[in-house]
Length: 69
Image 1 (cartoon, rainbow, N blue to C red):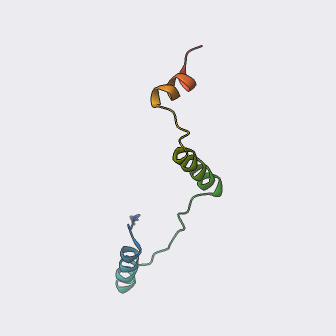
Image 2 (tube, rainbow, N blue to C red):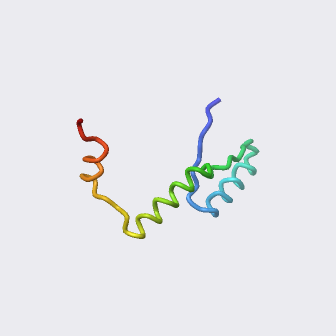
């Protein structure tokens, strides 16, 4: 049998989808989609750096990380 993966955009959609599946007697399972701590920490650090003005342009990034030696 085929399976589908659904990505509700808000809690109301999730609640409605679960109610419909239950009403149709369709078995389903939920899965936590939170990010691992090291990813969340890295994102928070990057956002903090950007907000404090510690940024570089794309061309500066390319020169720094992709320069031919």
